[in-house]
Length: 174
Image 1 (tube, rainbow, N blue to C red):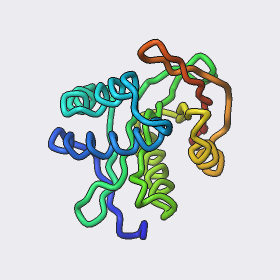
Image 2: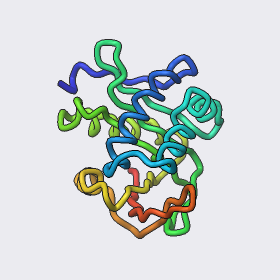
Image 3: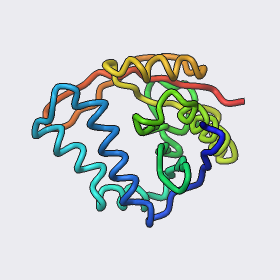
């Protein structure tokens, strides 16, 4: 299945589909007890058409899309020159998001997308990729470990008066 997936960098014309897929995956992952105002505000902030357009316009950010038969099935969001206090290396890229539509999980698409990301960031001079994964997302924690990412510490994601623990993962690139 993953062999019929193609990858490309996002353009502003992709904002609508990125927003729809991002909303779907975000809610499936983080709104496991239902929707409440703080979750609704957070998902709208990031995945409304304006939110995605704003992200795409950032010069230090790139989104890599995975498409199958001209349909968006996954995307990765990267932030270049992203530092974190637990990282020993200052030449790092943050993998802010790696979202795969639920119907396409377990088919190797996420793994291929992550490999594409690792290839993409090399020419930018980065020698480390790092990310935060929510402690409640067991599938993501296992996925990144299986792909050679090391758990190097904890971090907190805060919004709307709430704080949620994350694990920080990093992988040194060759």
